[in-house]
Length: 431
Image 1 (spheres, rainbow, N blue to C red):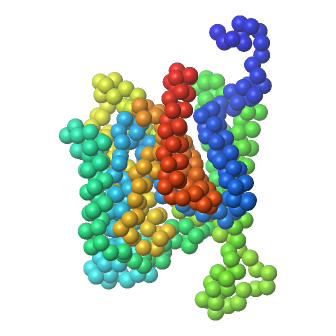
Image 2: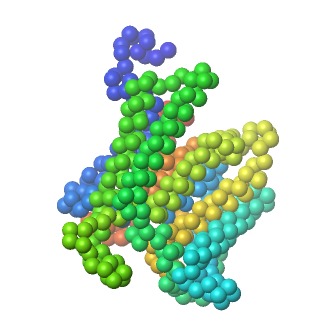
């Protein structure tokens, strides 16, 4: 029986409001911390941190780590760790670069600019990344080698394998269509961004309505109607606001003049254009939706969280935890390939140091996002928010003029504090 029931006192209005909305309190805390962080940096940068241009750049800088962080959630939930993701990214980036510049032109006669090059390059990268991830999963799941040791070895092996693939050279320039998924060079534009926003809002509201109908049909408790409406308004407002900010970043006049001149035209008087939603962010959204569906709506997702919560009970119940481990690391490898495509496309080249220390950023993003190192608990949206917080912290300190060594110190302290807060929260809630 609750304290309010015993004493006859009503719970605070704020508690009643948030309990009716059924919003995760940890998520609210993370959003609150992110908002405070942005406001503080905005003050110290003289209002430059929250400009549309900086927010646009912040989103495309977050994508590579955020994509891998969604896979790291599955890895950590099952009580493993993957220290090789940064090095694996470098290997796959090298493979994709060599496919574009060496293999396809020499073997198939497809020169840079051919419409099939970017598709074949990404496909080759995903296949290689998935196979490497599955190989590491076999070593962990079937041979019983601890994931820490296997992926620590992978950190050394794959980084240097990338060096041998490229012969230690920077490979590029890469195909123009391929580089469009890197950020500012490939966006939906203002009109298509608003169309995407409308479709996203419609899909979110439809899912919310469908979930409520399903709960009512099976006799489960549902939120009050006003709470459902409030959540719908919040979600729709967040989507529309995000797109509005991206559309507020206009293409510079010199870029417009260059683009029009390439077509033999002049920029019309008073003409402006906005960048809109980058393709890389669109890719992250697709990955996040797919990973969330896997986590919440599929047998694989249920097995992952069951194995992480109690591995022994999961195995006794008939779950093939060894094969499950292979699948998880294969997914992680495939996501590393997508991140490699985004990272190398943003640079326009494949370099030897690409992805350096990304393994630490990815793990930190997942942990800050609420994934428990003890296993069994984690969310996809939390990991993405954790990646955004990490990137905001680093970008803000860089804009303020904080030296790189001090930036790393601050990030390390934040990671430790985040884990401590998570431990204290779980002790208080009994999770």
